[in-house]
Length: 260
Image (cartoon, rainbow, N blue to C red; front, side):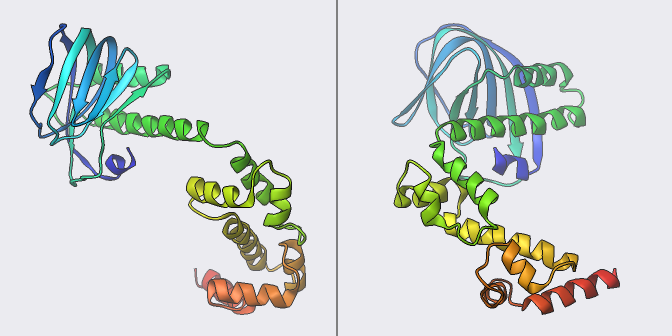
């Protein structure tokens, strides 16, 4: 849903749609995206070789421009939202998401209540729609996180807690976890888009920058408090990472601050 949220919505229509049980039927590609919340009924959706089942309390998304077929297994009642975005996005894929969040249901119902074809510029309805997309994205995030090995967020928490300890490193981290170093690296990168060692270095650097521009600490104190083995190593690492020596970085920051 993030891609849709970033692109302005240029059309939005909301319907209460009820359909009766029927045999499989082909649906030609439509010029709009469809997002529905099914209150009752069961529908089978086939797109190429992929099959989806939409049941009560399911949110279903169908991108525009797709040919597919549907079979209404049980009479349905749903809130349907048809919309289009300013920018084309060919990366959008269909999904059926089970929902237990009643807040999401209320947003669908409220959009149906507020929407009127007589007021196409109904900004309250548009605002509710962006809220709906944001809540659906949270559902996806929760679903992704539920599939993550608990050791991975535990590793992240331990890095954030122990970064100031010069003796703390990825080997000592692995020794505290029930996983191998290679598994930690690959899963951590998959979940957070950064390796454990890169994250440890990032945390140390960001804390060092924060302490540096506070102008309260010496270079020796910074190196010690941020987990660097020595002030010389800290200066070398900082300069390579930022393109400035710690002293020059602080001078530039304080100069820009005075200019404001």
